[in-house]
Image (tube, rainbow, N blue to C red):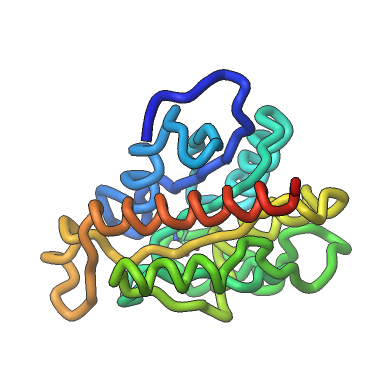
Length: 215
Ligand code: PCA
């Protein structure tokens, strides 16, 4: 990694503020390490999102309009998962009832009114998974990004990009970081350094997919 040139295409990398009683969120702790870095010809711009609907979805859409990125990767914490989760699908549903302290949206609020039921990730998930396995980083493809704020951000980004179908965009959930592990002794955790390596791989593989498109 090196400092970037201004002319490089942008990869927008998002993370989240802490939520649910945590004081940190590995998604932002990892994302913020990449701000201004150049990886495989893409310059990384980061944005930290609130864990709130609809503010998070609005903020990612505003960042897409502002930075006009060539690729987007969203990061979020999925406490309890044991591996890097490459999300395959985002659904048009925000269900916040199960979360303590959050407002009750009666269950079935759409992310985007009258939007399609779902969007599929446009990241090269199989290629990313292969590279992560090669690096011996635990990872898997996930069929559910949930129905909470991470899902809403993935959905809102893909909806915003619906007229740019070749632009790679998607979402990756991260386990608890080791600094959170003491509060969750039963749950798996991963070090921020390993998660950083995983995100670096995801960015590099995404960048190489863009280069292949151009050939
Ligand atoms: N994880 C939550 C919201 C923010 C985050 O980091 C989720 O999975 O929806």
